[in-house]
Image 1 (tube, rainbow, N blue to C red):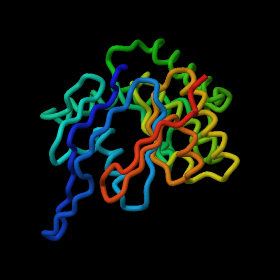
Image 2 (cartoon, helix red, strand yellow; image 1 turned 120 degrees about the horizontal axis):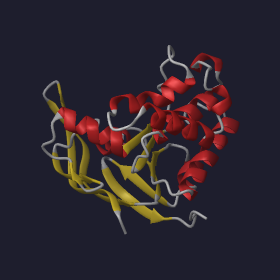
Image 3 (spheres, rainbow, N blue to C red; image 1 turned 90 degrees about the horizontal axis):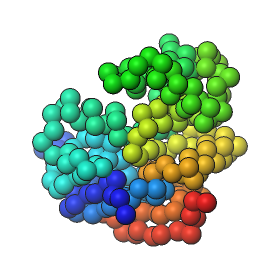
Image 4 (cartoon, helix red, strand yellow; image 1 turned 30 degrees about the horizontal axis):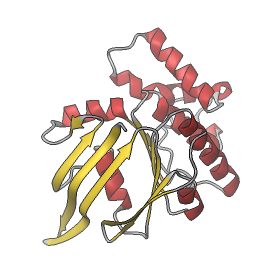
Length: 233
């Protein structure tokens, strides 16, 4: 098994008004290549904090985090950004598309920070990513001209563009009606069948149970880690 994520004895605390709050406590977690992991639990249990740490958007107070062979301790801000751009694809609840950019430009955005790809390679990657989410016909549209479900599909295309080691999805269906939510989940399952490694935070029990592995948090600790029978075809 290839470990994409290895967390060892992770603690995360926040200091506000001289009161220390422990958001994560002694978290041990491995995610292997090809898994579809859901993270669930009540509000305030540490789900978003954990995802921020996994996405290198924040750092642990103590413990070790290895991302696809990279020890993430003692990295500079610039080094963290480079690893994040190459290794991680983010899918957010609120889509986080830039309204002034059209669909093509939004999907292209992560590659504009790369200097190892030619313009033709970037163009090919954008076209392939849009084809995967069946949105190539909307590439000249702007986010305001798209439905919520279409915007999330564009956000998924953007997450795929760097061929990341793992997709991190934060409540990807949270802003969608049931029909569009199902379309997005169907797309994530299709990507998983094609080999994507996915870690998804969700409050939706049905979404959580459709993964291949379900992790439950409570008060900053992992209280359940269950293998599910939903294996990729």
